[in-house]
Image (cartoon, rainbow, N blue to C red; front, side, top):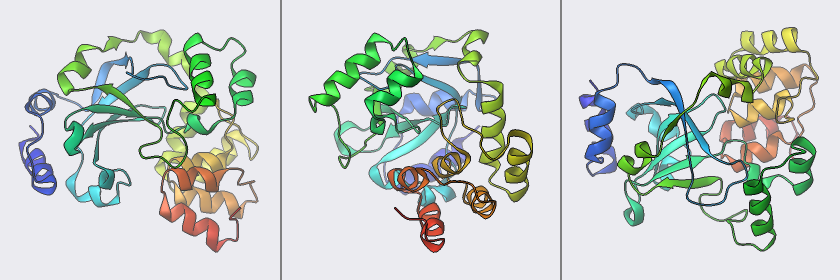
Length: 258
C-alpha cells in the first residue's frame, strides 16, 4: 500500500527502514488506529505513559520542513494531544522508537504540576525529584522532550495497551474542538476559535490561544490572534523550544520577543 512512499523515504535517508515497520504499515487500511493505544516509556517522564492514535508513513516532500528530521528523527505517528511518535534514523540507535511531548512539560515549574494536578502521580513526582538532581535531560541538551519507548518497532507495538472509551475523557471536548480549529492554521479557524471560546480561553493545560498556535506551528492563527489583541504569553518560548521558525519570525516582526 505504501511501497512507493517507503522507497522515497529510504532514498532520502540512504538506508532501508526497519522491515517490521514497513510490513506493519503496509497492512494498515487507515492511518487512524482503532482503538487508540497507550504504551510505557523507558525513562522517567513528566506526564506518565505515551499515547498513539495514528500511525503513518510521512510524506517525503515535507521532511525538509520537519524540524526534528535533521536530528535523525522520523515522525511515524501522533495523537490528538499533539505528541508524536518517532523512529530513530541515527546510527547509534537506528530503529528505536521515541515519544515526543509537544507540551514541553520538562520546562514546567514544579508548582505548575502541583497546581494543575492535586493528586500528582507517583511517577511524575519521581520525575520532578530526579530533575532537581539533574538526572534527566536539561534544557539545551539534545532531544529534550523525547522519551525512548522501545529499542525496536517490534518491541514498541508489543507493549501497546488498548485504551477504552473512557480515555477520551482525559481532555475536554472544548479542548479537542479548539485543537482541531487551531491545527487547521487558517484565518477562518482562528475566527471560529475566538467566536466559540472567547479571547481568554485557556486549554486543559492552561495555555492561551497564542501559546497553542505557537505549539502547533499555526502561524496564520497566531497572526490573527495577535491582531485581535490576545496576550502572547509564552508563545515565543514554545516556538523556540520546538524550532518553529515561522512563528519566531512573526513574533520578531511584531516586536513580541522576550
